Image (cartoon, rainbow, N blue to C red; front, side, top):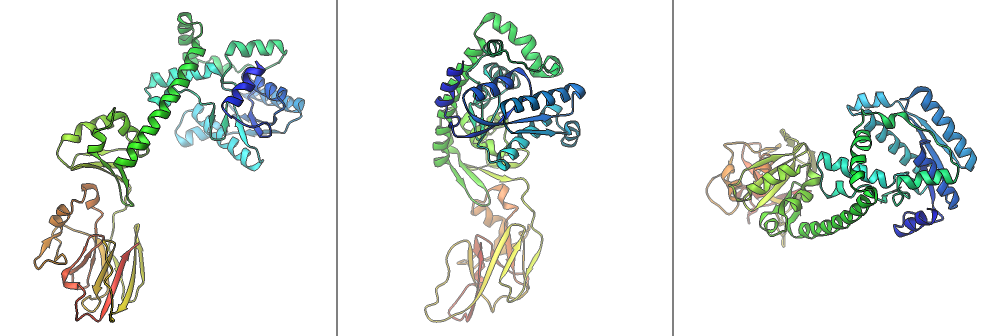
Length: 442
């Protein structure tokens, strides 16, 4: 078995012989085997044991056992006593989730502070099988069907090539002692029910179930990599990210294979579920304005694109810009101003993010506010008035971005600049202009 584990470590480049590992040891059979194997292979490691305060004297005995094990191998030993139940209540999560969060945060902190390279856990083939079936029961995509990865960042799992019977054979052959955790047989936990009630039935059908699912997980992992690359290629063509929003081209999305699957991968960072993504795909042929919301973002179907914005965008209040003030930072908007004298060869700055205004036509203080229904201005180059609501429609501003459009208003109530879009013709720079106020959105 040692040769098989060593080959697995090399095949997946889990770590090099000179790396130092932090090994998570509970005292159970699996982690006791992992520590023994690494010792036999001559790997430099330290042992970490978490005491979660859930099993009273039994947990105390586990801690003493692991402490002696570290002394036997003459390796550094770290122990942490967690307030697991209190943390679970505080965060509103299950005790199991709390214990997992606490131990992995502590493992990573130890890795960094102790100058260690990787964190090794004792997951094996049966753990992969249980994880795959549990994820499948709850509903999952490819990410939930690849099981437990051999390597994930600084986490490594050297025993994933080994079955549970192999581990039993190893402890018998090497006369190892371990501690049994009674909670592993508790039907309270879903994983235990799967392990005790469901998997034995499946193993009657396929005695090599763990190995079969391990191979399946490897194949699914390969398929997931193919999908990841395809999604990246699609994103490069269909996705555009701007400071205020992310845009997805509907026509390009429609040309992809398995559109809903690809779109779900693109929208995963924004918190949209697969069922919601299917509804979004159905909206492709509908009129503009359809809205969809995840816990963190809002998506609007706008003509030939999807527009995604954070739901937490701050609503702008009213802010003033005084004469001579060079900068204004408010609610995520950063404006810089510069007063220039018009001299021969003066060039008017170009671009939507900058406005060159006749300084003597402005009345201070200027006001920055969100546009309102009824607002109108005279877009530069036009002689007549234009309702701002109509102007934004003409500019094809997506629905979920309209509420965040701001205007720069002169003290006499005239809109001087629809920020990021168009200055007002009444404040344009002419041959008679002597001073120019340049306002730039940073």
